[in-house]
Length: 203
Picture (tube, one colour):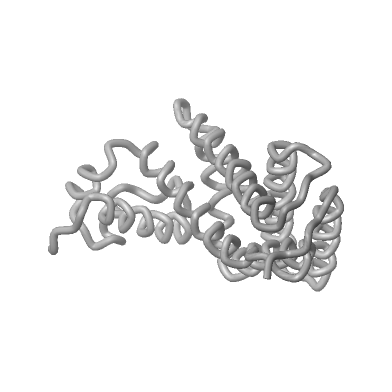
């Protein structure tokens, strides 16, 4: 087995854990099955992660990173703020549609953490990460498109996290439907309406 820097090995094992947990569920995924999924020995797993808590935290951060990368790329300034916001929501929604199992895993991780004594802080960290991510994206847009909001950034960030969380769960339960496009348009209009002063996008 080729030697690999510990950070890369942790990432390899985290991605393997995501695949295994998506396929088998969190309770049925063991350290042995994750090591097998990654093609490494169990000792390598324990060298990289000293606890299941550390693994789950890495899984949560990595899954969030998967779709944040897509959204960040999509919300580069366009002709109007509404178009920019709409592109970001669409990019997120395309990721949900293409990776329903991975998004379903996020809810399973939340429930697992809440039900395991000593793991509750991971569920809190998961939802704080969602809000922190939205706050970062909002500030990125404010800087690039020069606008002011009608509500504080932390309030809007938490609102967006709660809204997309509920919307995603509805999709996972109800399945694909033509109504989602109209719902995304409604959300985009609402969020764009929370802007007080919009300057023209930089060219």
